[in-house]
Picture 1: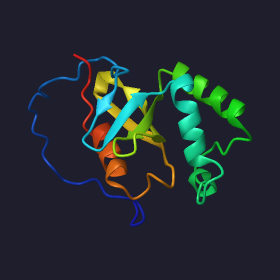
Picture 2: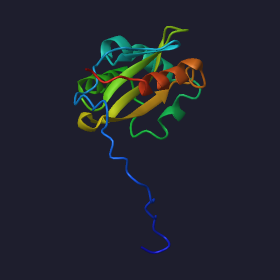
Picture 3: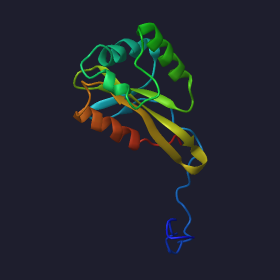
Length: 152
């Protein structure tokens, strides 16, 4: 290795067994409850209107999509179709984020790159409508994602 390559850290592996082992199952497609936010498995009929209204035609709405590979949509029908496709995926698993204070769905997040055998998962596809940005509900939504429990 030359000086420009990362050097492996010298550390002793414990050899201890991992306990408990990952369940080997995918996460349940269930509502995740937080104090300020509720994450609901995406449903195009239930969530499309609120999510579209909170993210299209509002001040700051276009900025949501700047670093995502999709959006904004030209109209409600296109958005509803996209949400219907999202609901059909097994990986990623998409959620609508509902602010408990306003009662409105105003963002999304997902679990992706799910590897149950290893107990590993990522969160992504995160977008918050301007009304959700920098709120307690936004922070709580991410906490709910991170505190998820695998199905047993």
